Amino acid sequence: MSGCTRSSMPNRAHEEIRMKHVIAAVLILVSGFAGSVQAADVEGQWARGDGNAKVRIAPCGSDICATNTWIKPGTPKEKKGDKLVMTIKPGDEGVYSGTAFDPQRNMTYKLTVTVRGDKMTTRGCIVAGLLCKGIEWARIN
Image 1 (spheres, helix red, strand yellow):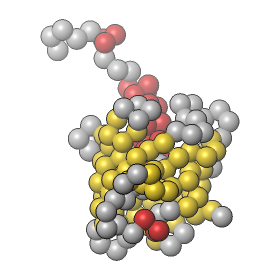
Image 2: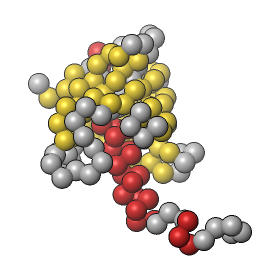
Image 3: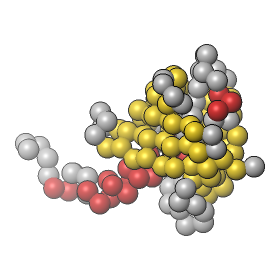
């Protein structure tokens, strides 16, 4: 490891926490559909399964954006109004895949969204798909 010192390497625990927050942001703002994708499946209000966030998913330009409408107090690195812009294409049986751009962190993620009625599962990955996190969602009125 020439040129690297221990202090220049990311702390694994810090990186895991950061990854969780990054993926949570991606998954909070989960379903951007462009073109022929029927965004009605994902449009609306969604609550994250862990109770830490609520989002509104709606069209934004030619994409779909998920915008944080509520963040549980004390949830680090997330705030009301954060947005995720997604470009996802339909696959088989309610599964969509593509990318999501997080402008707050200037990062793009691989994203898979599965919608089954009022339930949604999102899975975001970074580092060439090596670090992934999935989150469950429920549609709310």
